[in-house]
Image 1: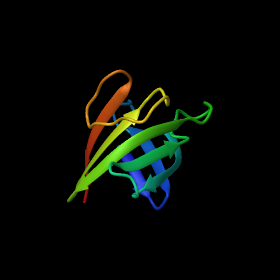
Image 2 (image 1 turned 120 degrees about the vertical axis):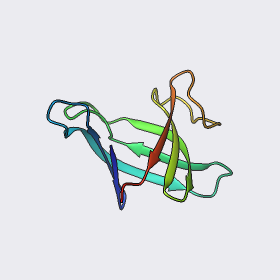
Image 3 (image 1 turned 60 degrees about the horizontal axis):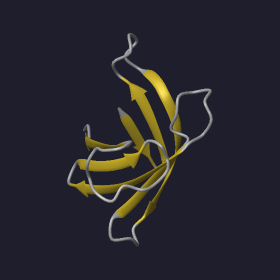
Image 4 (image 1 turned 90 degrees about the vertical axis):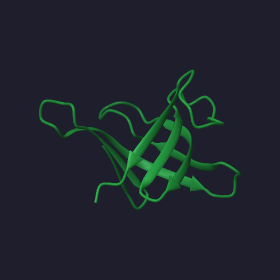
Amino acid sequence: RLIIDGETISAIDLSSPDKDKSMGTGTFQLDLSKELKVLDATGVVLPGKREKTYLGIYEVDGDTLKWCVDNRAKERPTAFRTFSGKYLLILKRQK
């Protein structure tokens, strides 16, 4: 589960035995000036690990967020698909 609040993003592992294991917290920045909207998240890593910036693109359609991110932090994705270290997350808002 991802929790996005203001400029903070937190990840929670719901598959862990205690159902709420923190995977880390960080911040994110949006850039709406580009053709593909940019969402870069920094610090969203396991607690105790060094900060990392995930370069990404996003799209919002109603309550659905599509976020494609480079897990290796080398280059920003240019399409919404999973390949070569890039991961596509499709998230639904929980009401």
